Image (cartoon, rainbow, N blue to C red; front, side, top):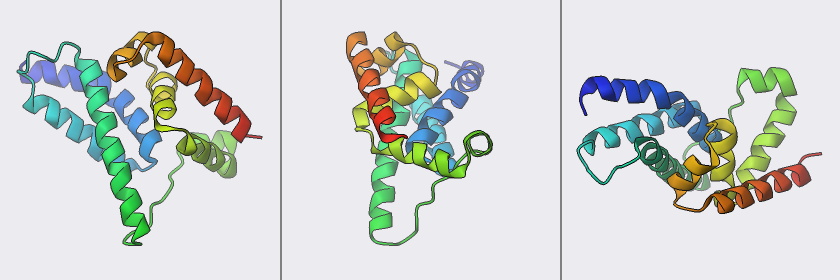
Length: 159
């Protein structure tokens, strides 16, 4: 893979990766860092022949990095080194009102990790069931089940 192919890959997937990671972390700068780190690691491993699906590799890498970042943020918050802030996009704030958007963000945050990852990839990264199944290494039926349970939990949590 040359730099032109890498640039095309970045252009094609960076926005969807950011949207997914942002809804995992709810912090713009941390989400940008995670996306950049995922692409940097991909570049380092670009000659690895075991990477058959670049998109799946990038999403798995980004979700793993976001999960690690989230754990670090929780530790940092626990020790009160720096308060973690919830960011709400202007679109959410305009459409739903700040209070409603924060309520939705908190409901998504409380989902089990397996349900949250499926929900974020399908609803915010606009990935297909088969793409999500490949990224997570699960069946499409499991993807459908996790999405169903995530939506059900959100409906119960939201008035």
